[in-house]
Image 1 (cartoon, rainbow, N blue to C red):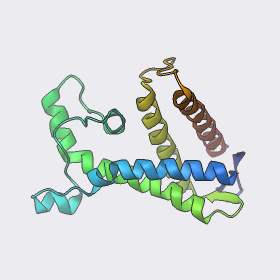
Image 2 (image 1 turned 90 degrees about the vertical axis):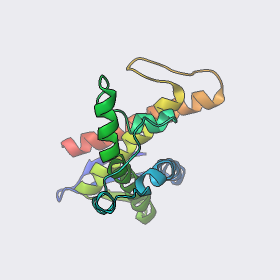
Image 3 (image 1 turned 180 degrees about the horizontal axis):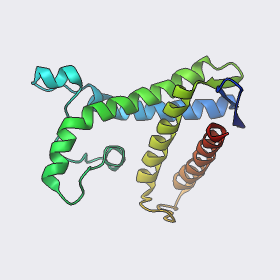
Image 4 (image 1 turned 135 degrees about the vertical axis):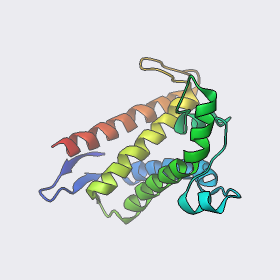
Length: 177
């Protein structure tokens, strides 16, 4: 990966090898696939459906989805349930849209990847979602945790997690310039 940089017009430019681009696109597609059903779920209430309100009343069983769509009120289960019912669908839909932006921008890139300011924000959010998902799969809960470290799959996920941190840092540095 060639680090991101910012052009005079605010466009962010970076480059990935075809393998790197495929990995990021695949991971973004997995995020979109994981959340697509939640983003498109429909309630019986047509008003809620028309404005994107809706969701389940409980935290998801899948630890990765639970990490992406956490309880808003940890100490108040009733408030957390009510908040989730009102916001889960729209939050999942935004996460799916961010992941699709990553996929689309990588697909149109010919050599150098160019991101508008809005696309770069979608990239940051999608990269964060990917890293949160990997952290959930590895059992990383807090800074300093290593989570699972046994086996080739865990080691590969750790390498991927660290590399995505580098990509995110590069993007943030370019945005900060």
